[in-house]
Amino acid sequence: MTFTMRCVAGLAAWLLSLSVVAAPVEISGVKLDEALELQGKKLQLNGAGIRYKAIFKVYVAALYLEKKTGTPEDIYAAAGPRRMSITLLREIDSNELGKSFTKAFEENALKAEMSRLIPGLLKMGQVFSDQKKMAAGEGFTIDWVPGTGTVISVRGKPQGDAIKEPEFFNAMMRIWLGAKPADWKLKDELLGKMP
Image (cartoon, rainbow, N blue to C red):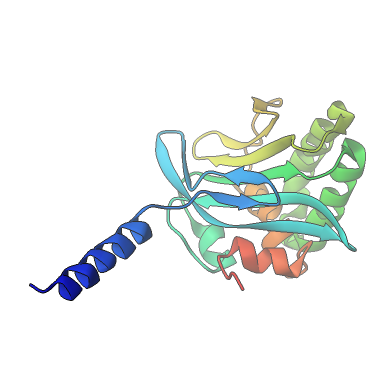
């Protein structure tokens, strides 16, 4: 093998090794895990992006699933655990955040399910009301845990009882993935449709 061929082979091997090492994901200074474990199941990052309100960055959202998918329908139909992670990029009044989630929830919830979702919506509103303010860098997760329900954790601590109705988690996901999402660009990013 000539020197040139050895150099080309070495360069090819080096480039291949780079593609195997997963680079950490960072969005607007928020570091996101490529994978995490929830209830003994490995979840992978499906997509992530920034929620903007006008020109202001509000939060980074990251969606974790057992298997990557590009459609909301597949996410709603998934049987295993799922997680939406939100990390704030600015200080926000928790009541304001709760009200904006409630509005987006109501705009995207299936009308036939709404009466069953009201108790969960009230619990979610109470979770945000109890927080008062959340600072930049703080966050919360919304987990679907099969057999338990929807668990909302703030700053890593579960808040209250799980919301048992299976429709509730999907109704929450419709805030970002529904027909009237909070942010269309963020919807595409969560579905892994990066520009």
